Every structure is written in structure tokens, then in C-alpha cells.
Image: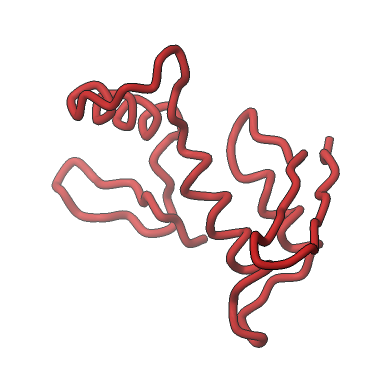
Length: 104
């Protein structure tokens, strides 16, 4: 497995193939937003942005040999606890809109 956020052992060595738990990453993101004084009202930034942008790029923007099929994007959508696919992907420069149904 390949993770954006790989776990780090107590000795400081990265552990590729072992993810940092979702709750830990979310805690770090919350701390960063607070320290950076980012004003978002009652909203909360989540790690979803690290996932969605990449999947949308692979589906709509990537070079032909690096594009993902809709099936792969749907599979990738189950990446984190509490995440479900129910999004519209729209490319601003075209009229194409892709609906990805929620996967149980």
C-alpha cells in the first residue's frame, strides 16, 4: 500500500505501507488551522481535500495512460472512515458532468 501519510516509528523512521490513523491526521490538521488563524466559521477542514483532488485529476485531467476509470475513482472513494462517494465532478472548461453514486 502507498499512503500520502505513512506512519512513523518511535525512532523517527518512516513505515511505508502503514498509514497514520485518520484521527491523528485530522487532529494535526485541526491544530494547523487553529495555529494559522484560518477563519472558516463553524466549518471544519478535513483530509478529504487530499483525496478528492487527486481522484478528480486522475479521472478528468491526467494524461491518457495515467487516467483512472470511473470504477477506480469509485473504489478510491472508500479511502477513509466516514467517507462516501456522492459527488459531482465537473470540469469548469467543459459541459461534462460526471455523477459518482454513493457506494454502501
